[in-house]
Length: 135
Image (cartoon, rainbow, N blue to C red; front, side, top):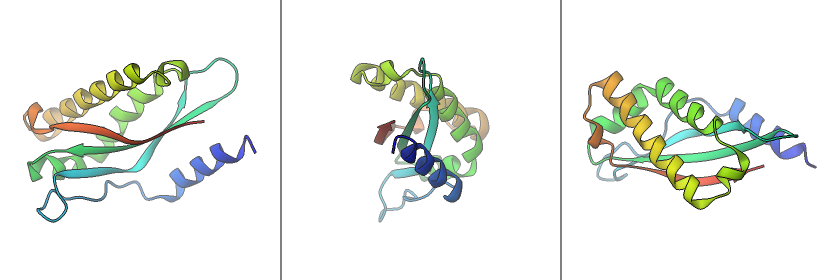
């Protein structure tokens, strides 16, 4: 049973197409964009392998920002995976640490948008972890 959840997480990641989906910033969908599929990383942990799955939503009232997140999905996912994989299990169980990581992720994505799309950093207003699982 202990090996079942990591296997399911891996299968979900491999089967789900690597695209950003949902919300396009239109009036009907609102200013949110779900970054899909969920980010799944190995966490630093002594002993056995540990996994973390995080679903992320970005918020901007500027449709250009949401379109840029979709257009630059590779650098966006790389930035999130690099940041999240550097975390420890103990750290991510702490609510304050999770909030710091969320703010770091926001800054990382702002840098990606500035570098790859030429957008102003403040145009990406917020980033939310909408689902968070540590196994």
